[in-house]
Length: 178
Image 1 (cartoon, rainbow, N blue to C red):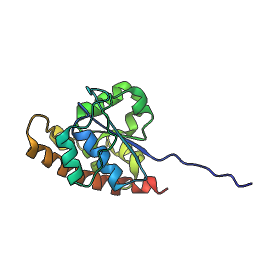
Image 2 (image 1 turned 45 degrees about the horizontal axis):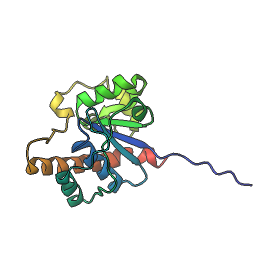
Image 3 (image 1 turned 90 degrees about the vertical axis):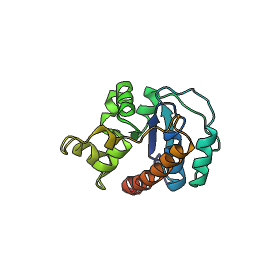
Image 4 (image 1 turned 60 degrees about the horizontal axis):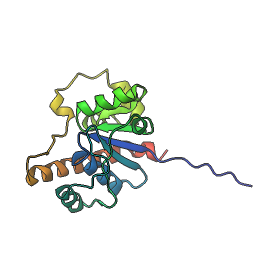
């Protein structure tokens, strides 16, 4: 009899404030770009169960993502604890995740921070490098919130996130293919 070992896929949790624009876009773009990863999202002040914003859906679909079945989720300690990589879209989101699950510190970053620190070594390498590189201004670690700024700002945010997610795919591919 042959034994088959099943390896769970990497879970990447994206966190923003309302789970309305940034984190759903990042989640669904990663799902479209890297099906072997389990992408989820949550908000620090989300309205649980709310459907995807209509404008966000439009931007997502224009970028090749799928909005089907999306429902907003409140960030919880359990979500953070069950995720192999937690990526805030701003420093406040990274900090909120770590406050909920302090042991997740070594696998919790902002998206831009992770991309800056991960040099092909995945989460462990990024965690080690975190304290060895010079600090950057907060704006360099954050994806600006398009909330209340109109459709063009949301489209710009979506395009920026698409570029970042493509970089993320390259950064985490070695982790997924191990």
